[in-house]
Image (tube, rainbow, N blue to C red; front, side, top):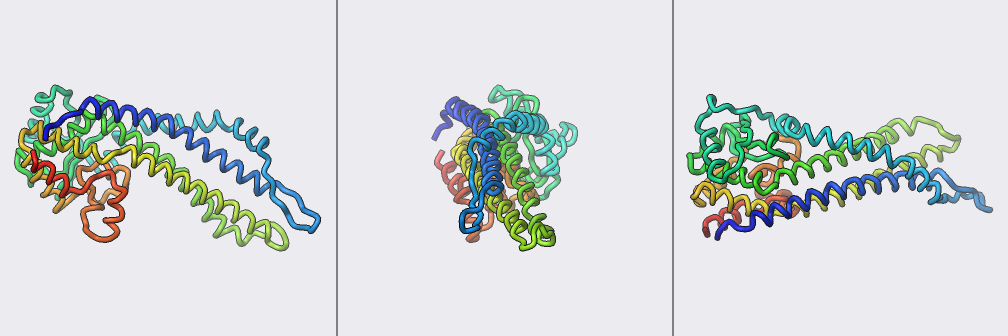
Length: 334
């Protein structure tokens, strides 16, 4: 099995990145329209001949309010996105507790990265290290200035030179294939949606905890109606956010890991070394303390899916990583 199709993978990842850039503002605007429509529906109405209150939805009023909010939504999301886009390096570094690694501190790792970059004729990325006795590694970044390869101290201590070259070659291939650009873009988008959902949840919590003590009207229907409105809005927004998460997961194909494995095997010249490294990492994966699932999808092996239990199996069905044993079996067929 030869490593082929790198240009196809690059074009595919660039296309997915553009699609995510175009899709995300649309999803945010849809969420805003639904929010305004629900407020309009529950806030407007009339009493029928039997004295029952009938809710009504004024599409014209919703659209009028929606049009007036579009510029503010676009400006707000754009500012948020660009701040996160250019601060992605520090965001990822802080999430895992990484620090820069110098040639003086560890010339072995530095020389391996440098030699592999010379082999594939690419610019040398930054090298970070995480003080973790367990094993893991990942690549990140969106351009030449931010491309970074991060390894744990456990990985450097417990892998031999050939195994370490295979792992680093895998991560360099992610950079060459523009996988990291796609992943970082999806991390930023999911982070924005998560923040919006957090605000909705906090609003729901405030209404549920404090709303019951407010007496909006004598029979309490106003207070109950407010709770229903917030709950419905929260449910609808959660559904939209969930659909968006599924879309990003489908965009991030598991094929990229097989492609990176093939690229790493080609760069280091020893597929069995990378297979051996994956076996060691899967037996003792590091970076398990990272609470960011979006960042964890960057890792060569995600610690959350290392355990063989029912929940990890269900989660693996939606994982962006293929089964490690299958990856090893493919490498052994080279």
